[in-house]
Amino acid sequence: MTSPQPLKRASVELLRQIADHDQGDGVIFMPSPHGCRQLDGTDFSARNETFRVPSQHQLITVEHPRLGVWLVRLTEAGRDYLAQANERRAKHSPIKGTRATYTVVDEAIR
Image (cartoon, rainbow, N blue to C red; front, side, top):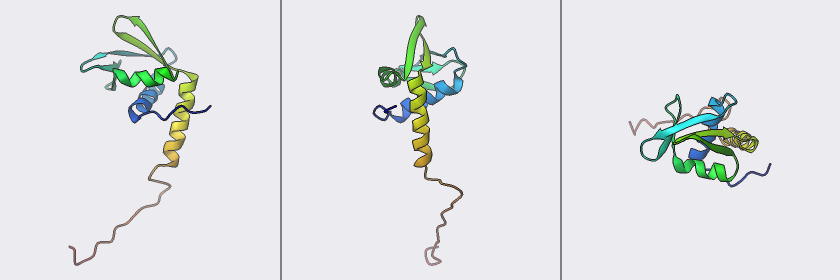
């Protein structure tokens, strides 16, 4: 799959939360203050705009089973995108292996 333009961190975190909590039927987002949606049963919330770009790129589907309630599912393309994002994250992580960085402080500075 050719990746769409890289998503903002908030959108990638949204994909991760959906993937972590979806048991196969999608996840429910309830209205929350300040233009946000809260993942039902968790403390995770995201602004309404955060759903727009993943939905436009067909990474998620959003249905409205009841007034104000969103049923969100991660698509196959969304799962692929998330796998690629996780690979990029691991590859560019500042911590690789068990390497440690030590700082030497000059005695005169203390």
